[in-house]
Length: 289
Picture 1 (cartoon, rainbow, N blue to C red):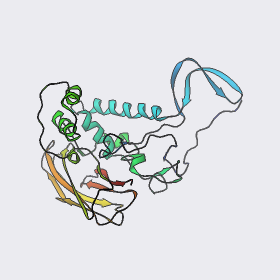
Picture 2 (picture 1 turned 180 degrees about the vertical axis):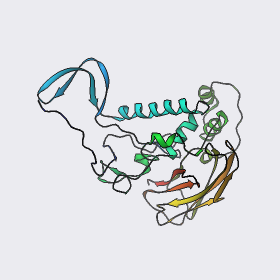
Picture 3 (picture 1 turned 90 degrees about the vertical axis):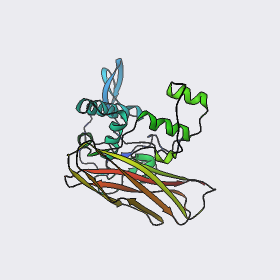
Picture 4 (picture 1 turned 45 degrees about the horizontal axis):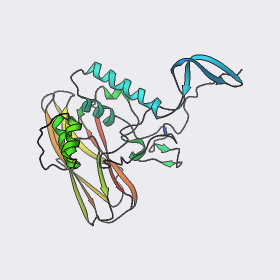
């Protein structure tokens, strides 16, 4: 019998597994999916009783087993979400998701963008979302992109659902909708979906609101990273100043494309303050003509 060993320092790591779920969302491609990347390969976890696990040439009965799949990554994210709720019981589900996404990392241990096992090349946010989950940093994200019920209602209205569908979704018979764009859903990512009808030059704006959950006084400055040629991004204002906790500030991200492209291009917006908080969001433009 031989025993399996855990190898430390393997490079490059992490990577997007071949079987990992990938975007875009077929229903609402303007909301970046997946949200985040988490461990899902050879995960040792509790298993159904009397499970047989093959080790070499031996079949062993065990209450624990190694398994792989997106369903093995999900418990990691759920567990982090539960821990964040314990630390911040006042946070909404949207706030918890935001904390996990904006503190994730998109660079592997070689200092480059996380790679995809499927293509053996650099991945994109359609594969790793905002990046690989970082539980410790998620406890203190600095800023969060929060949402209320009305935000979800506005988004569903923008998808042009029928009254019957809306009622089924929100479990009520009356609601109100404004003319807000579906791009203005207060999500911790920004996605522009182009079609064969897209005309260039293209300009698109995304409105967002962030809430200060860090120190009472904080000044965040916008940093744009990994912006590809042909994609122009501006942020207004470039500085967000907070004088108390739970204070909110609004900003607008503007995307300009002067020519067509195919596939996926992306960069990152990072709000960085004087206390070491980095609030990162992917900015993605996709064109699958």
